[in-house]
Amino acid sequence: MKISNRQFEKKLLEKAFLILVHRGSHGGNIIENTSDAVKVASLQRADMVEIDISKSMDNEFYIFHDGGEKRLLHEYRNIKTMTSSEIGTSSFHNSLDEPINKKVENFEYFYNHINHKTLINLDRSWDYWETFLPFLDKFQEMHEYFVLKSPPKREYLRQLNNHHIKYLYFPIITNLEQLKILAEFPDLNLVGLEIIESLEDEFKLMDSPMLNPYRRENLMLLSNSIKLNDQTKLFSGLDDNLALLEGAQFSWEPILKTGINAIQTDWPDVLYQYRQTLK
Image 1: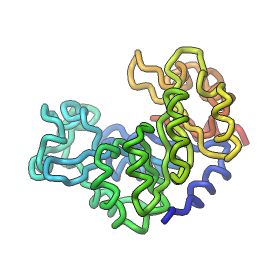
Image 2: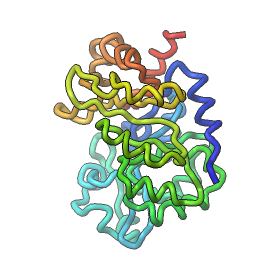
Image 3: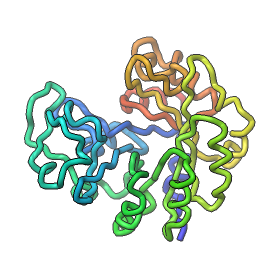
Image 4: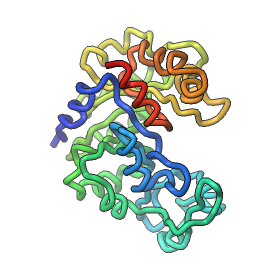
């Protein structure tokens, strides 16, 4: 059964471009990858919220980006090596590094504390799809609002393709060869592509004729303007910092001129204000 993409498509057609929020809107006592962060992202006019999936040693799914344990929990073990009981005893530290009474949320808690009409991009779940996809089937009320993504490896695409429920999906594209692999699976419920342009001032993917079929199908072409660090280029050096400190005309505007119609950001409220100027 192929899940309807009408909710996703409606957003894409209504907006000048979509605004996706990286791990939800967080700061102060609002922690990334929590239902609170999703609520705040919605207040800041996000169209979709990206969250990360991790799995405990005893096979419980959590909303957490593994690798962030030391920073967020003062925990030196990777969450994937911890049991659900151990995770349950760990509390977050806020943006001032103060301990607060907030726990890592398992998927059920997260699901029960968000608006079920929020588009949720489920990131980093691909290593668990053998068990995560059947698990996700239980949450029927949000099937039209869940959007999966992964690198376009054949093993991942095969798992998606063979699952009886065809969830909305977009791959992370870093080179043109991956588009050839994607073409081997025409029955995927494809709603877009995440484009990574890793070289400064170059748009090898966005300038390629191989993207033309996806443009013609009015699919989402997503860029990342998040700035992870000083070295990583996610979209040719155009990022949130440049937009915030120099002006949107130096970052978000040239991103959109490449044909991008969705931007993932850590600053949805500012990006929303920029989008308002395009009306």
